Amino acid sequence: MTLLLDYVAGILVVIGAMFTLVASIGLLRLPDLYTRMHAASKAGTLGSCVVLIALAVQTPDLAIATRALAGVVFFLLTAPISAHLLAKAAHAAGYRLWEESVMDDIADAPRPVHKTTQS
Figure (cartoon, rainbow, N blue to C red):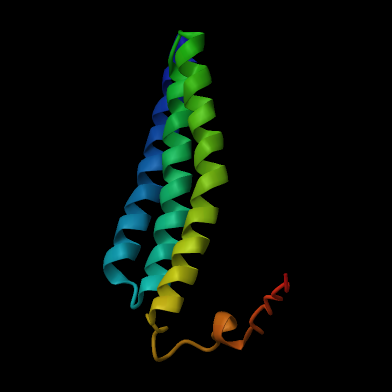
């Protein structure tokens, strides 16, 4: 049984490393900030999560496995939100899309109207 878990954990580590490698290549090769951020947040998060799942499979200690799975949940909950907020902040700061991009959804979206209350 432990030999099977070793093989499963090894395969998961290789898969996680491949996703992380794809994320790092995306950071180097993609043309603008937004596509680079997409590569880092999607492939990097998936690679990290798969490696943490491999740790949870491999370890005999329940406390370590629980922490690893909590790390997976933390990554899955925080990475998309932080990437979205960073992209909105970058767009507001003036970082524009790659010139060959087809559509800018943030620029086309209507701005929210803030109503002021009079005292």
